[in-house]
Amino acid sequence: MAGTFITFEGPDGAGKTSVLTALMPELAPHLAQAVRLTREPGGAAISEQIRQVILDPQNGAMDARTEALLYAASRRQHLAEVIQPALARGEVVICDRFVDSSVAYQGAGRGIGEEAVLAMNQFATAGLTPALTLYLDVPSAVGLARIQAHRTGQYDRLDQEQLAFHERVRAAYLRLAQAHPDRIVTIDATQSMTTVVAACLAQLHRFFGSTWQA
Ligand SMILES: Nc1ncnc2c1ncn2[C@@H]1O[C@H](COP(=O)(O)OP(=O)(O)O)[C@@H](O)[C@H]1O
Ligand SMILES: Cc1cn([C@H]2C[C@H](O)[C@@H](COP(=O)(O)OP(=O)(O)O)O2)c(=O)[nH]c1=O
Image (tube, rainbow, N blue to C red; front, top):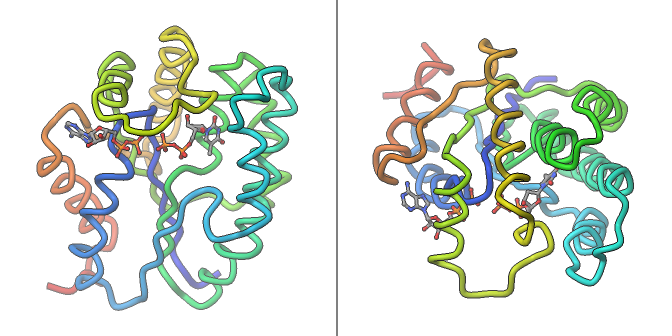
């Protein structure tokens, strides 16, 4: 596949959405290739419908494995409709969350097993792995406090989970970062937004090396 696949990961409230919004216009001029920002479930209508079922606060009875399967199904459709075609065109695809999210949230957070969730996702993605993952790390209490301080809309089903759940999620992310030091770069996301954006840009500069345009 000709393109480059990059993901952003982090616990809720790490700042992925804010950082990516600020980062994209700064990144694009440095790359020769087109850059596409997408997020799970991205622009795929079927993925969006699946996600609505997962996040519906009325679906509190959802079984943890059902949830993991639905995330993987949503991911598969997004991959087939959005990510793979963009990579085939040679684009740089930046995705807000991917398989690491399922390993952390479903595998560790819900406790159904990180290995099992990874294996199921390998089927869903046919093994597509990001070339680079920027992991925005914040203590769970900081992430949750940010969300509570800035929230305007309703809480979704996953936001309602206890602090302990979020701590299991973060611990799993830290384990993933330790297990895959060549792919996953940890960024201290307790720093100011400007500093976090600059740190992400510096990592992307390092990653693209000589193809980075001044
Ligand atoms: N570095 C930061 N310092 C302080 N607040 C931040 C920072 N990054 C993001 N925020 C705030 O935290 C909240 C959650 O950020 P968001 O980008 O939605 O996170 P995520 O997409 O990772 O859940 C937003 O209200 C945002 O303004
Ligand atoms: C992609 C993915 C997300 N999630 C969770 C993380 C979030 O709590 C929730 C919603 O994701 P998202 O809309 O991406 O929220 P955020 O702004 O925090 O990135 O879904 C999983 O549990 N498993 C997954 O595979």
